[in-house]
Image (tube, rainbow, N blue to C red; front, side):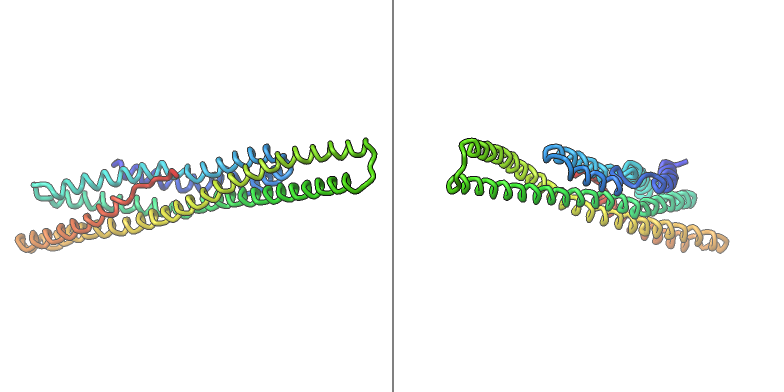
Length: 292
């Protein structure tokens, strides 16, 4: 069994396995629980929890279970294509038997590219789930920033009220001391909240950057899978061209018109070679890079 055929069978088996596997590293119901928990935590603990969750979701977008098999299949297909191209471009004329073998191998390669392209919906379904989780984390970050700012404003108003009471009201020394202590506590909390707002703001900026980069990556993946789908058509056309030559050979073999048949077969092989140039151009762009 050829390496390309083995890769194709692996992809077909993988399609069923992925469909039955969990859709994401951080499930949609889990993200709701995480957000609720984060909302009840102090800022430092909430920031840690959401940061860890964001990391897991980003990692999930970069480690789809199909990627290793897709890369293996691409490697096998491109290697097989190069081998066939070397055979066609060699000094020795391609025999009828070789043409039949090449046509069969090209058909397998076409099916392999088609099988890879068929994985696209699953890849994007899992990816959209994680992108939704990442977006939900961003919403929670926005809530935490708003809460921190609201608390800061309340503390400022409390300090202003204390200052006014100390200036205008008749207070006992003990009441003044209590208000002084309250104001100091307010100032300490405000200092902590200002640091929290700054930290959440930095987290938010990184979150926006990640969402932008993941969006660009999704667009690149869309083009990648489209190229695979079109590449399958190119290979299928190449296989059909060779099969047509073989069919003509069988149909005309009894007519004795060897010279005309050879000329026709040469034209067909040239047509297939032109198709292979298109294949090469597409292959040059088929370098999936799932990393950020």
